[in-house]
Amino acid sequence: MILMGPPGAGKGTQATLLQERFDVPHISSGELLRSAVKRKTALGTQAKRFMDRGELVPDDILMGTIDERLRRNDCAKGFILDGFPRTVAQADALTAMLGKNGTRMDHVVSLTVPRDEVVKRLSGRRTCRDCGAMYHIIFEPSNNPGICNRCNGELYQRDDDQEDTILARLDVYDRQTAPLLALYRQQGLLREVDGIGSQDQVFARLLAAVQADA
Image (cartoon, rainbow, N blue to C red; front, side, top):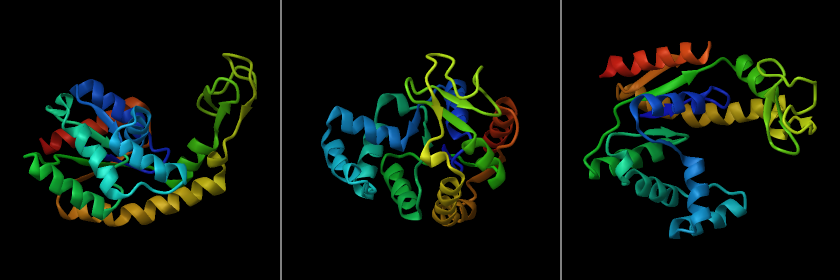
C-alpha cells in the first residue's frame, strides 16, 4: 500500500494502526534514509552528501534504499509506504522495481484534509525546548500554558509550524502530487479517504477503502 496525504493529514498515525492490523512494516522514506546514513551503508553514505547540503537525495539512491528495504523478509506479506513516491518518475520506477520482484501495488490511499484544518493542526503544535515533548494548544495542551508537563521546559513553536511556512509546504505538496494522484486514479488504484474525525473514524474509513479493493 502507498499512503498519501498532505502534512498534518495523520498519515503516521494511520500507518501505525494499519501496521498493527495487518502485521506488515510501515516504511517511511525519510526514516529509511536517516537509518541508512546512521548505519553507514554504501547508499547511506551517498545520500548523506546530499542531505548535508540540504539537497534532495537523487532518485537512484532513494530507489536503492527502498529496494533494499522491500527485499527484507518482513515485507514478504506486504508493506505500507509513507512519503514515497512523491513524483510520477518515482512512481514509474517503483512499479518497474516491484515488477522485477514479482510484486505489484494493491492500494493507493490518499487522506484528504482541507487546508484550514491542516493549518489548525500544525500551527497549534508546540515543542519542548528541553526534552522534545510535543503538545497542541487545542487538541493536547500542556497543564500549564507554555510549560512542559514532563520537565517544566519552555514550549515553543517550530519555524516549520508557522502558518506561512505551512501554506508554502502545502503548495509544494499540491504541485508535486497532483500528477501522481492523476496517474493512480487513471490506473484505478487511488482511493481518497476523508481525514477529518477521530483516529478511529478515519481508520474505519481507510479499512473500508482497502477492503473494498480486496
